[in-house]
Amino acid sequence: MFKATQLRPGMIIVHEGDLYTVHSVDHRTPGNKRGAMATRMRSLRTGSTRDHRFRAEDFIERAVLDDIEFEFLYHEGDDYHFMNTESFEQISVGADVLGDAVYYMIPNTVVKLEFYEGKPMGALVPDTVDLTVVDTEPTVQKATASAVMKPAKLETGLTINVPPFINNGDKVKVDTSEARYVQRAQ
Image 1 (tube, rainbow, N blue to C red):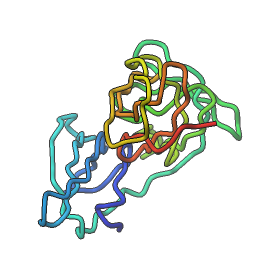
Image 2 (tube, helix red, strand yellow; image 1 turned 180 degrees about the vertical axis):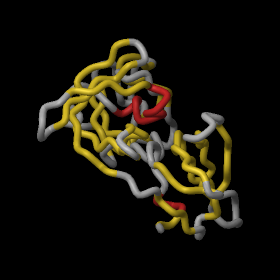
Image 3 (tube, helix red, strand yellow; image 1 turned 45 degrees about the horizontal axis):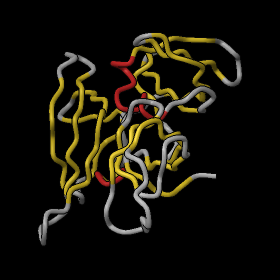
Image 4 (cartoon, rainbow, N blue to C red; image 1 turned 60 degrees about the horizontal axis):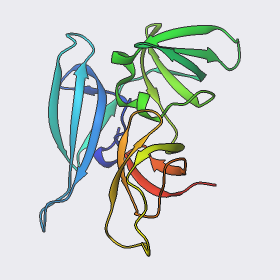
């Protein structure tokens, strides 16, 4: 059991007696009300997708799965190819199983694939990843680090908001739990 605030994309949880893969998580704190975790989940039994809002203080049961460390190699269409870091065995996993975790994987990224009864169910990505900006508006002269943000498309297809001093080709550190800019990467 863990608190709802620790939900991450790719986790597999037990909710109302069914196994669900968490595809996206958004921590919302509206005004002076209590925080909530708005999630989009996919049922592993039926394949249907549903939205659910957990209160921040709710406890969630995590499905008991085998976490095996794999290195992401490449993707071809909707198939993502991984190599077991111990046995060097290679497997292919569909994008529908991985969910939003695909936005945080570049070649050579080490992730933990979760298996339930020998079948891959999802991926746990690192808390932060360094990704390259491929498309953003040019920097405005005399731009400073202010509260103004601009959209930037990253190498994996993910779009996040970044400060105005970030340009095409810059590497940025991205928080995988909230899909947000953390800092410029070295």
